[in-house]
Amino acid sequence: MNRRNFLAASIAACTVTPAVAQPRFNFEAAAAYSAERRGVSLMVVQGGQIIYENYPGEGGAERGWELASGTKSFTGIMAAAAVQDRLLSWDEPAVETLREWRNDERRRITIRDLLSLTSGIGGGPIARPPNYDDAVATRAEAAPGERFAYGPTPFQIFGEIMRRKTGGDPLAYLQRRIFDPLGIQPTHWRRGSDGNPHMPSGAGLTARDWARFGWFVLREGEGRVDANALAQCFNGSRANPGYGLSFWLLRPGLIAPGRNAGIEIDPSFAERFGGISMAAGAGNQRLYLLPELDLVIARQANGVLQALMRRNRGPDWSDAAFLRTLLQG
Image (cartoon, rainbow, N blue to C red; front, side):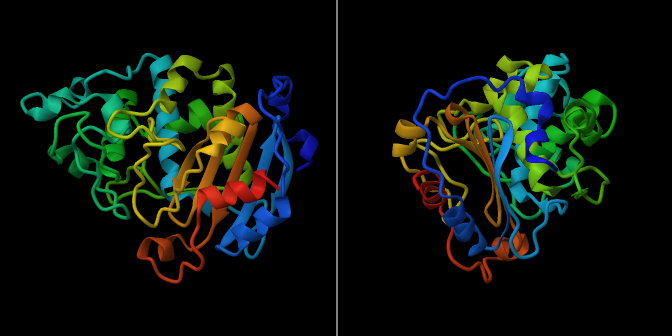
């Protein structure tokens, strides 16, 4: 694909001058940092154009890779589209759809609570998403808003809500509403034994398609999704200021999903380059969004299973170290 034609439909909208000084990109050093940590793709898009792409090892422009928990970010954007389509509202009680919750403590849980992981329902084992029925049957352990609990169960509950609201496969709604207009075609998407798609993990995309999705989000939905609804995905909660609605927000107060997640914050980035949000998954799959720089960075790696099992992971990953290497020359 010609670099000048990448995201051609969006380039006309890219006339915003960043409010911060441009970084001194060091692409080769950043690519080396990534490759040393199982990296298979690195793509940098600015102003709607690819300014760097690299596919070391087994990587390739047409090859899709498991996004692991990077998949979660699709649920927030799906929900924003559903808000625009009047299928739901962010603060709608989930019990309006999940009537089996009407007589217990879960009746207070909202869509926002589920996607911010503050519903009070435990996350469950990260690598084993429950089937939709089992997720819906999970009882709350705390009141909504009290604490942040990372894991797949709330996203599977959201999947069941979308299944009921759309009367079909929630992935079909995502494909029709978001992916098809963008020309995105997942290379695979894992499903449970109930046949329903895993909403917190299991999607596979090429780096170009993941970057295309990131650009769509950075451009506030490009008129296809209500910008105000989409903006809600980037508001943190009191329980975790560093997690919005399915997106990580690299800011002070962030509660990481675990000690080995590689999520390390450098406060100076916000001062120099503006706020940074990201989708993140095991094996250090990363999609960084830097609105002030009009910049999207997609990074993929192999070895998701090894990362989840903490075996042969190689050198540790640090978001701060990677971004310093790329942005500060």
